[in-house]
Amino acid sequence: MRNYIVAITVIFTFALSEIHAQQFVTGTIYETTNNNTEAPLSGANVYWLDTTVGTITNNDGEFKIPYQRRNSKLIVSYVGFKTDTITINEPTEIRHWLIEESSLDEVVLQNRRQTAFRSYLQAQNVTNISSEELLKAACCNLSESFETNPSIDVNFPDALTGNRQIRMLGLTSPYTLITLENIPAIRGASQSYGLSFVPGTWVESIQISKGAGSVVNGFESIAGQINAELQKPATDDAFFVNAYAGNDGRFELNNHLNFKLNEKWHTGLYLHGNLREAKMDDNDDGFLDMPLAKQLNLMNR
Image (cartoon, rainbow, N blue to C red; front, side, top):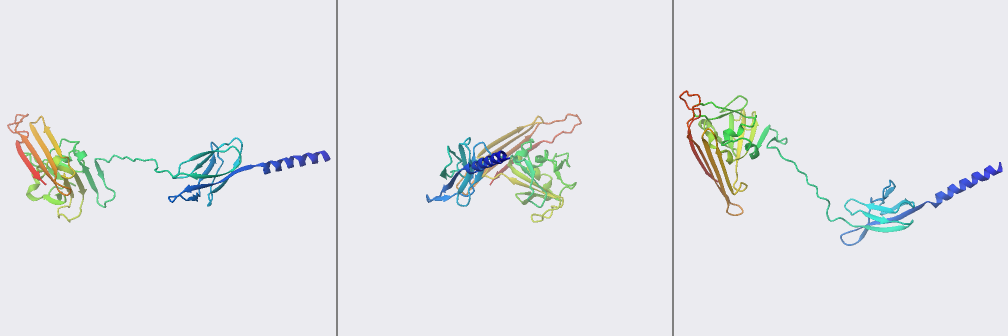
């Protein structure tokens, strides 16, 4: 019985010696301020490489981490500072300074805007059509700019002249307000031909609002409002040429010339020509399938 008691005492004594023999690495982490003074860095991460053993510095920048012989690389990191690796060969006390990074890694976010989109920041249901959307169709004037957009219904009320008319919510003029840069431009008798007098290359973007809207610009916006923003000499290309030819004998030419006079003054000369002289009568009924036309538009702004 006495031998067992001695054995238990020896084992207990050996365990206590192991606990007291556990060693630590202690130290303080500093940062260098702009006036070259050192300040304790609170909240810095201190851990052994490839292990889960780690700690963080206190308000005074101090830390204490257990040391084992198999661990030799001590990692010190903090957001905005360069991460350092310290080689530790024995339990010791260290003082280390972290160097602030001059710049963080660049992050580039890219998003391709749709050519036709709705703004969720406006109270009205407004559809914005950019100039990229107009390139999807071989449009040559404002009335032909809506052929690829389902928001607008374009019909041919006059077969003799071939002019197009805008219809929104089943209603035509004078229940639809059409403006150029928020100024009523196509109204009254000009509804029949006004859309064909605005070349497609002159249009920068189109805003379409369906349903009853604001009457600030006019009282016609019962079925909706269509606003066309024209090209600006300050943002348009300095030189632009566009040509169109169709197998129906239609030829068009567009030319933009923009000049910068000074920091506050720009001027632009816009030319549009439309010609259709070929007579077509495929069904031999004695009537032309498409009317003949000659048109010349000139604008300086």
